[in-house]
Length: 407
Image 1: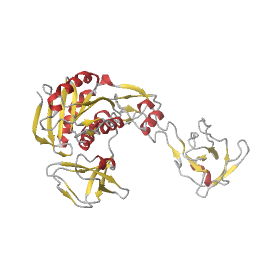
Image 2: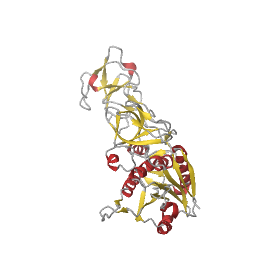
Image 3: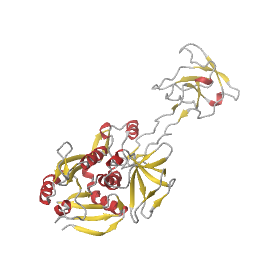
Image 4: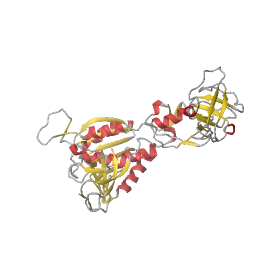
């Protein structure tokens, strides 16, 4: 039998339950190794230590002249110009009293400990290679315009920690360290089921009391944007036996089932009825919108039941599934979190964590989009942020500081 919890749990408590539900999917036998570019957007599955120093050798930060700083007094001096040092070459040792033209990124000659930028030289241009020449240079301190070996990262140091989201910067670091492939967590497979006799596929004929399904598109696009593999089976009716049969057919091929609708306390809550006999709990979370939630397993496959109103199901995904996936598997990347000031006052229900839709503006304020209703899809479409009003806060004035998640 499914279980019903009458009291409302906190957002944090329900997120902990979701974390516990999905944690068993993070196992060593599911880790795969991918070429770097194929790993874009995935989560790193193991710590990566640097196998070498970066940079691997001391090199010039500027086009200029490599010198021994002790050769140049405070007032500057003339030095004999020797063979240039192009990038990628192994230079000769630098003899005392000489200066070597050196390119940005080129290896510092042994004996040289500073670089004088070409703009500070007289003349301020490189001589023709092979022709005898001198150059007048100002004094420089040891280390000027030199990138020391290991100044970025040293061999043996932690380059990237397990759970890191692999974006271009992270893949670039791995390439710089010589890696060609990387261990990552797999893409999770999600079965997404929308329910309701009142729901019609977009493009279909709307009869009396019917609405077009927006939940499927909202959640599937959110899930795909988060890097998940989504299977949809069309809209399930409000007949519990039909939904149960659909789940039995498809659940064995996925890692997680997500349903929308049918989790409240009404007389025709199909998800509740279809879960009869399975270890699924239906509870109320102290959150607006998105209070009714289901969590458990169907034939051993994890299940999350989101409410049926469009904004409620989207907020449920953002509050529970997306952050837990980021924490456990390193992908998707966490939502950026900022502090902003309200452009207008708001009210929040007692004892609930309210999530409002809003637009974060360049001046650091955030304005509300629409009301608190869970059906306001147009307001959601015009929002770029979620505004968080924590439990215990019933009103905020214009100018109050709030936590904002950037969508």
